[in-house]
Length: 387
Image 1 (cartoon, helix red, strand yellow):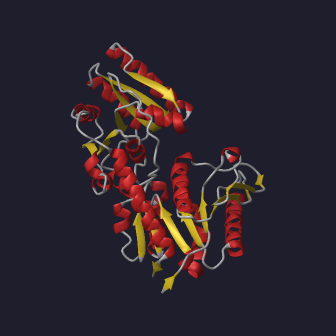
Image 2 (cartoon, rainbow, N blue to C red; image 1 turned 120 degrees about the horizontal axis):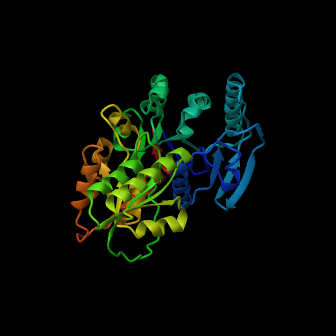
Protein backbone atom coordinates (compact mmCIF):
# COMPACT_ATOMS: atom_id res chain seq x y z
CA UNK A 1 0.00 0.00 0.00
CA UNK A 2 1.44 3.37 -1.03
CA UNK A 3 0.40 6.41 0.98
CA UNK A 4 1.42 10.05 0.71
CA UNK A 5 1.87 11.57 4.17
CA UNK A 6 1.84 15.22 3.14
CA UNK A 7 0.08 16.83 6.10
CA UNK A 8 1.10 17.94 9.57
CA UNK A 9 3.25 16.07 12.05
CA UNK A 10 1.95 15.70 15.58
CA UNK A 11 4.96 14.99 17.79
CA UNK A 12 3.98 13.50 21.17
CA UNK A 13 6.71 13.62 23.79
CA UNK A 14 7.74 14.71 27.29
CA UNK A 15 8.69 18.26 26.41
CA UNK A 16 8.80 21.45 28.42
CA UNK A 17 9.27 25.09 27.55
CA UNK A 18 11.11 27.09 30.24
CA UNK A 19 7.88 28.62 31.55
CA UNK A 20 6.42 25.13 32.04
CA UNK A 21 9.38 23.58 33.88
CA UNK A 22 7.80 23.94 37.33
CA UNK A 23 4.36 22.78 36.23
CA UNK A 24 4.94 19.45 34.45
CA UNK A 25 7.20 16.41 34.89
CA UNK A 26 10.48 17.16 33.11
CA UNK A 27 13.35 15.11 31.69
CA UNK A 28 16.02 17.61 30.54
CA UNK A 29 18.05 14.89 28.79
CA UNK A 30 15.40 14.41 26.07
CA UNK A 31 15.09 18.05 25.01
CA UNK A 32 18.09 18.30 22.66
CA UNK A 33 16.97 15.26 20.63
CA UNK A 34 13.37 16.48 20.46
CA UNK A 35 14.51 19.94 19.35
CA UNK A 36 16.73 18.37 16.71
CA UNK A 37 13.91 16.22 15.30
CA UNK A 38 11.59 19.25 15.20
CA UNK A 39 14.23 21.32 13.39
CA UNK A 40 14.76 18.49 10.90
CA UNK A 41 11.02 18.26 10.22
CA UNK A 42 10.80 22.00 9.72
CA UNK A 43 13.78 21.80 7.38
CA UNK A 44 11.64 19.41 5.33
CA UNK A 45 8.92 22.10 5.34
CA UNK A 46 6.69 20.07 7.64
CA UNK A 47 4.28 21.83 9.98
CA UNK A 48 4.89 20.43 13.47
CA UNK A 49 2.56 20.47 16.45
CA UNK A 50 4.62 19.41 19.42
CA UNK A 51 2.17 17.83 21.87
CA UNK A 52 3.66 17.66 25.35
CA UNK A 53 2.14 14.76 27.24
CA UNK A 54 4.21 15.54 30.34
CA UNK A 55 1.79 15.19 33.28
CA UNK A 56 1.25 17.68 36.07
CA UNK A 57 3.78 17.93 38.90
CA UNK A 58 1.21 19.15 41.39
CA UNK A 59 -2.57 19.31 41.42
CA UNK A 60 -4.55 20.32 38.33
CA UNK A 61 -2.75 21.55 35.23
CA UNK A 62 -5.10 23.27 32.79
CA UNK A 63 -2.89 22.90 29.72
CA UNK A 64 -1.03 25.48 27.68
CA UNK A 65 -0.47 26.57 24.07
CA UNK A 66 2.43 28.40 22.49
CA UNK A 67 3.09 29.40 18.88
CA UNK A 68 6.80 29.29 18.03
CA UNK A 69 6.66 30.24 14.34
CA UNK A 70 4.69 29.50 11.18
CA UNK A 71 5.76 25.84 11.21
CA UNK A 72 5.86 25.04 14.94
CA UNK A 73 3.25 25.08 17.69
CA UNK A 74 3.38 23.66 21.22
CA UNK A 75 0.35 22.15 22.94
CA UNK A 76 0.32 20.93 26.55
CA UNK A 77 -2.58 18.68 27.47
CA UNK A 78 -4.41 19.06 30.76
CA UNK A 79 -3.64 16.60 33.55
CA UNK A 80 -3.83 16.05 37.31
CA UNK A 81 -1.47 14.79 40.00
CA UNK A 82 -2.15 13.21 43.38
CA UNK A 83 0.16 11.87 46.08
CA UNK A 84 -2.28 9.00 46.61
CA UNK A 85 -1.09 6.11 44.40
CA UNK A 86 -4.62 4.83 43.70
CA UNK A 87 -5.88 8.25 42.68
CA UNK A 88 -2.70 8.71 40.65
CA UNK A 89 -3.53 5.55 38.68
CA UNK A 90 -6.97 6.95 37.93
CA UNK A 91 -5.38 10.21 36.76
CA UNK A 92 -3.02 8.20 34.53
CA UNK A 93 -6.02 6.58 32.82
CA UNK A 94 -7.75 9.95 32.54
CA UNK A 95 -4.65 11.52 30.98
CA UNK A 96 -4.41 8.64 28.49
CA UNK A 97 -8.02 9.29 27.48
CA UNK A 98 -7.24 12.99 27.08
CA UNK A 99 -4.34 12.14 24.76
CA UNK A 100 -6.50 9.82 22.67
CA UNK A 101 -9.29 12.39 22.48
CA UNK A 102 -6.90 15.09 21.31
CA UNK A 103 -5.55 12.88 18.51
CA UNK A 104 -8.98 11.75 17.36
CA UNK A 105 -10.21 15.34 17.20
CA UNK A 106 -7.19 16.90 15.54
CA UNK A 107 -5.28 14.39 13.40
CA UNK A 108 -6.55 14.34 9.82
CA UNK A 109 -5.90 11.91 6.94
CA UNK A 110 -2.44 12.64 5.57
CA UNK A 111 -1.09 13.66 8.97
CA UNK A 112 1.57 11.74 10.88
CA UNK A 113 1.70 11.01 14.61
CA UNK A 114 5.32 10.79 15.75
CA UNK A 115 5.65 9.38 19.27
CA UNK A 116 8.73 9.58 21.48
CA UNK A 117 8.64 6.13 23.06
CA UNK A 118 7.93 5.88 26.79
CA UNK A 119 6.28 3.27 28.97
CA UNK A 120 3.97 6.09 30.05
CA UNK A 121 2.32 5.71 26.62
CA UNK A 122 1.46 2.07 27.10
CA UNK A 123 -2.31 2.51 27.47
CA UNK A 124 -3.28 5.10 24.86
CA UNK A 125 -0.67 4.06 22.27
CA UNK A 126 -1.69 0.41 22.42
CA UNK A 127 -5.26 1.43 21.59
CA UNK A 128 -4.36 4.00 18.93
CA UNK A 129 -2.05 1.57 17.13
CA UNK A 130 -4.83 -0.99 16.72
CA UNK A 131 -6.86 1.35 14.55
CA UNK A 132 -4.46 3.89 13.04
CA UNK A 133 -1.04 2.22 12.86
CA UNK A 134 -0.48 3.51 9.31
CA UNK A 135 -0.30 7.06 10.73
CA UNK A 136 2.26 6.25 13.46
CA UNK A 137 6.03 6.62 13.65
CA UNK A 138 7.61 5.47 16.90
CA UNK A 139 10.88 7.11 17.97
CA UNK A 140 12.73 4.59 20.16
CA UNK A 141 15.44 6.24 22.28
CA UNK A 142 15.42 3.56 25.01
CA UNK A 143 13.98 0.08 25.46
CA UNK A 144 13.04 0.67 29.07
CA UNK A 145 12.34 -2.91 30.11
CA UNK A 146 15.98 -3.75 29.32
CA UNK A 147 17.46 -0.96 31.45
CA UNK A 148 16.57 -1.82 35.05
CA UNK A 149 15.08 -4.45 37.35
CA UNK A 150 12.19 -2.12 38.12
CA UNK A 151 10.95 -2.10 34.51
CA UNK A 152 11.63 -5.75 33.58
CA UNK A 153 7.99 -6.66 34.19
CA UNK A 154 7.12 -4.69 31.04
CA UNK A 155 9.52 -6.62 28.81
CA UNK A 156 7.00 -8.81 26.96
CA UNK A 157 4.57 -5.94 26.48
CA UNK A 158 7.22 -3.48 25.33
CA UNK A 159 8.88 -5.69 22.73
CA UNK A 160 5.47 -6.80 21.48
CA UNK A 161 4.50 -3.16 20.92
CA UNK A 162 7.78 -2.25 19.21
CA UNK A 163 7.66 -5.23 16.87
CA UNK A 164 4.11 -4.48 15.78
CA UNK A 165 4.90 -0.95 14.65
CA UNK A 166 5.07 -0.17 10.94
CA UNK A 167 7.57 2.68 11.13
CA UNK A 168 10.31 3.24 13.71
CA UNK A 169 13.23 5.56 14.36
CA UNK A 170 15.77 3.39 16.19
CA UNK A 171 18.38 4.74 18.58
CA UNK A 172 21.08 2.29 17.51
CA UNK A 173 21.99 -0.59 15.23
CA UNK A 174 21.17 -3.25 17.85
CA UNK A 175 17.59 -2.09 18.40
CA UNK A 176 17.25 -1.84 14.60
CA UNK A 177 18.33 -5.49 14.23
CA UNK A 178 15.85 -6.59 16.92
CA UNK A 179 12.93 -5.32 14.83
CA UNK A 180 13.15 -7.45 11.65
CA UNK A 181 9.40 -7.38 11.03
CA UNK A 182 9.00 -3.60 11.15
CA UNK A 183 8.49 -2.67 7.46
CA UNK A 184 10.27 0.69 7.60
CA UNK A 185 12.88 1.78 10.10
CA UNK A 186 15.82 4.16 10.25
CA UNK A 187 18.62 4.85 12.75
CA UNK A 188 19.32 8.06 14.63
CA UNK A 189 21.96 7.93 17.37
CA UNK A 190 21.17 11.36 18.77
CA UNK A 191 21.12 15.02 17.80
CA UNK A 192 23.19 15.77 14.72
CA UNK A 193 22.69 19.48 15.20
CA UNK A 194 25.20 21.66 13.38
CA UNK A 195 27.09 23.69 15.97
CA UNK A 196 28.72 27.02 15.03
CA UNK A 197 32.52 26.85 15.04
CA UNK A 198 33.99 29.46 17.37
CA UNK A 199 37.73 28.88 16.78
CA UNK A 200 38.62 28.92 20.46
CA UNK A 201 42.45 28.89 20.85
CA UNK A 202 43.89 25.73 22.43
CA UNK A 203 46.83 26.26 24.74
CA UNK A 204 48.66 23.81 26.96
CA UNK A 205 47.80 21.90 29.08
CA UNK A 206 45.67 19.44 27.13
CA UNK A 207 42.10 20.13 28.24
CA UNK A 208 39.86 17.17 29.05
CA UNK A 209 36.13 17.58 29.62
CA UNK A 210 33.30 15.51 31.06
CA UNK A 211 29.85 16.99 30.51
CA UNK A 212 26.64 15.43 31.77
CA UNK A 213 24.81 14.03 34.74
CA UNK A 214 26.67 13.76 38.05
CA UNK A 215 25.57 10.65 39.91
CA UNK A 216 27.30 7.85 41.78
CA UNK A 217 25.40 4.87 40.38
CA UNK A 218 27.26 4.81 37.05
CA UNK A 219 30.19 6.87 38.32
CA UNK A 220 30.91 8.76 35.08
CA UNK A 221 32.17 12.07 36.50
CA UNK A 222 33.82 10.28 39.42
CA UNK A 223 35.75 7.93 37.13
CA UNK A 224 36.88 10.87 35.05
CA UNK A 225 38.24 12.62 38.15
CA UNK A 226 40.01 9.48 39.41
CA UNK A 227 41.71 9.02 36.02
CA UNK A 228 43.61 12.28 36.64
CA UNK A 229 45.70 10.46 39.28
CA UNK A 230 47.40 8.65 36.39
CA UNK A 231 48.00 11.71 34.18
CA UNK A 232 50.84 14.20 34.40
CA UNK A 233 50.69 17.99 34.65
CA UNK A 234 50.23 18.20 30.87
CA UNK A 235 46.52 17.49 31.36
CA UNK A 236 43.63 19.22 33.12
CA UNK A 237 40.05 18.01 33.58
CA UNK A 238 36.95 20.19 33.42
CA UNK A 239 33.61 18.94 34.71
CA UNK A 240 30.35 20.43 33.40
CA UNK A 241 27.19 18.90 34.75
CA UNK A 242 24.12 18.68 36.87
CA UNK A 243 22.87 16.45 39.65
CA UNK A 244 21.36 16.53 43.12
CA UNK A 245 23.11 18.25 46.00
CA UNK A 246 24.35 14.99 47.55
CA UNK A 247 26.08 13.82 44.37
CA UNK A 248 27.59 17.21 43.59
CA UNK A 249 28.92 17.47 47.16
CA UNK A 250 30.49 14.01 46.81
CA UNK A 251 32.10 15.02 43.51
CA UNK A 252 33.49 18.26 44.94
CA UNK A 253 34.95 16.31 47.86
CA UNK A 254 36.68 13.89 45.48
CA UNK A 255 38.01 16.77 43.35
CA UNK A 256 39.50 18.39 46.44
CA UNK A 257 41.17 15.11 47.44
CA UNK A 258 42.62 14.49 43.97
CA UNK A 259 43.88 18.05 43.59
CA UNK A 260 45.53 17.82 47.01
CA UNK A 261 47.19 14.52 46.08
CA UNK A 262 48.46 15.96 42.79
CA UNK A 263 49.51 19.26 44.34
CA UNK A 264 47.75 21.35 41.68
CA UNK A 265 44.30 22.34 40.45
CA UNK A 266 44.15 19.46 37.99
CA UNK A 267 40.33 19.19 38.13
CA UNK A 268 37.78 22.01 38.08
CA UNK A 269 33.99 21.71 38.46
CA UNK A 270 32.27 24.54 36.55
CA UNK A 271 28.59 23.75 37.11
CA UNK A 272 25.98 23.52 34.38
CA UNK A 273 26.34 25.33 31.04
CA UNK A 274 23.92 25.45 28.13
CA UNK A 275 23.58 26.84 24.64
CA UNK A 276 26.35 28.97 23.16
CA UNK A 277 28.24 29.13 26.48
CA UNK A 278 28.31 25.32 26.57
CA UNK A 279 29.44 24.93 22.95
CA UNK A 280 32.20 27.51 23.35
CA UNK A 281 33.48 25.76 26.44
CA UNK A 282 33.55 22.39 24.70
CA UNK A 283 35.37 23.83 21.71
CA UNK A 284 38.02 25.18 24.06
CA UNK A 285 38.81 21.58 25.06
CA UNK A 286 40.69 18.81 23.27
CA UNK A 287 39.42 15.43 24.49
CA UNK A 288 35.96 14.55 25.84
CA UNK A 289 35.13 11.69 28.18
CA UNK A 290 32.08 9.43 28.04
CA UNK A 291 32.85 7.43 31.17
CA UNK A 292 29.61 5.91 32.47
CA UNK A 293 30.61 2.64 34.15
CA UNK A 294 29.05 -0.55 32.82
CA UNK A 295 29.89 -3.72 34.75
CA UNK A 296 29.35 -7.33 33.66
CA UNK A 297 25.90 -7.18 35.31
CA UNK A 298 24.79 -3.96 33.59
CA UNK A 299 26.75 -4.27 30.33
CA UNK A 300 23.84 -5.58 28.24
CA UNK A 301 21.59 -2.66 29.24
CA UNK A 302 23.83 -0.37 27.17
CA UNK A 303 22.61 -2.19 24.04
CA UNK A 304 19.21 -0.53 24.28
CA UNK A 305 20.15 3.13 24.43
CA UNK A 306 22.94 5.36 23.12
CA UNK A 307 25.34 7.74 24.91
CA UNK A 308 24.06 10.88 23.20
CA UNK A 309 26.82 13.07 24.64
CA UNK A 310 29.22 11.34 22.22
CA UNK A 311 27.45 13.08 19.31
CA UNK A 312 27.50 16.42 21.14
CA UNK A 313 31.22 16.07 21.72
CA UNK A 314 31.85 15.18 18.07
CA UNK A 315 29.66 18.03 16.80
CA UNK A 316 32.00 20.37 18.67
CA UNK A 317 35.12 18.85 17.13
CA UNK A 318 36.33 16.87 20.14
CA UNK A 319 38.05 13.52 20.22
CA UNK A 320 36.09 11.10 22.39
CA UNK A 321 37.20 8.50 24.94
CA UNK A 322 34.54 5.91 25.83
CA UNK A 323 34.13 2.44 27.29
CA UNK A 324 34.14 -0.30 24.67
CA UNK A 325 30.43 -1.02 24.38
CA UNK A 326 28.80 -3.17 21.71
CA UNK A 327 26.37 -0.38 20.88
CA UNK A 328 29.30 1.93 20.05
CA UNK A 329 31.42 -0.69 18.28
CA UNK A 330 28.51 -1.56 15.97
CA UNK A 331 27.74 2.07 15.20
CA UNK A 332 28.87 3.97 12.12
CA UNK A 333 30.96 6.32 14.31
CA UNK A 334 33.06 3.57 15.95
CA UNK A 335 36.19 4.36 13.95
CA UNK A 336 36.26 7.90 15.36
CA UNK A 337 36.20 6.85 19.03
CA UNK A 338 38.99 5.85 21.42
CA UNK A 339 37.96 2.85 23.53
CA UNK A 340 39.02 1.48 26.91
CA UNK A 341 37.84 -1.98 27.93
CA UNK A 342 36.77 -1.69 31.57
CA UNK A 343 35.64 1.15 33.86
CA UNK A 344 39.07 1.55 35.43
CA UNK A 345 40.65 5.01 35.97
CA UNK A 346 44.12 3.84 34.84
CA UNK A 347 42.73 2.35 31.62
CA UNK A 348 40.94 5.62 30.93
CA UNK A 349 44.15 7.56 31.52
CA UNK A 350 46.14 5.19 29.29
CA UNK A 351 43.63 5.67 26.47
CA UNK A 352 43.84 9.46 26.85
CA UNK A 353 47.63 9.47 26.59
CA UNK A 354 47.52 7.34 23.43
CA UNK A 355 45.64 10.04 21.51
CA UNK A 356 47.79 11.98 19.04
CA UNK A 357 46.27 15.45 18.78
CA UNK A 358 48.42 16.20 15.73
CA UNK A 359 46.60 13.69 13.53
CA UNK A 360 44.00 15.07 11.13
CA UNK A 361 40.51 14.81 12.63
CA UNK A 362 37.18 16.32 11.57
CA UNK A 363 34.33 14.91 13.63
CA UNK A 364 32.13 17.89 12.71
CA UNK A 365 32.07 16.66 9.09
CA UNK A 366 31.10 13.16 10.29
CA UNK A 367 28.12 14.51 12.25
CA UNK A 368 27.12 16.72 9.32
CA UNK A 369 26.96 13.66 7.05
CA UNK A 370 24.82 11.82 9.62
CA UNK A 371 22.48 14.83 9.70
CA UNK A 372 22.12 14.82 5.93
CA UNK A 373 21.47 11.06 5.88
CA UNK A 374 18.86 11.23 8.65
CA UNK A 375 16.97 14.10 7.02
CA UNK A 376 16.78 12.20 3.74
CA UNK A 377 15.61 8.96 5.38
CA UNK A 378 13.06 10.77 7.53
CA UNK A 379 11.63 12.57 4.51
CA UNK A 380 11.26 9.26 2.69
CA UNK A 381 9.55 7.72 5.73
CA UNK A 382 7.02 10.55 5.88
CA UNK A 383 6.31 11.10 2.19
CA UNK A 384 6.95 7.89 0.27
CA UNK A 385 5.97 5.06 2.59
CA UNK A 386 5.45 1.54 1.29
CA UNK A 387 4.13 -0.94 3.85
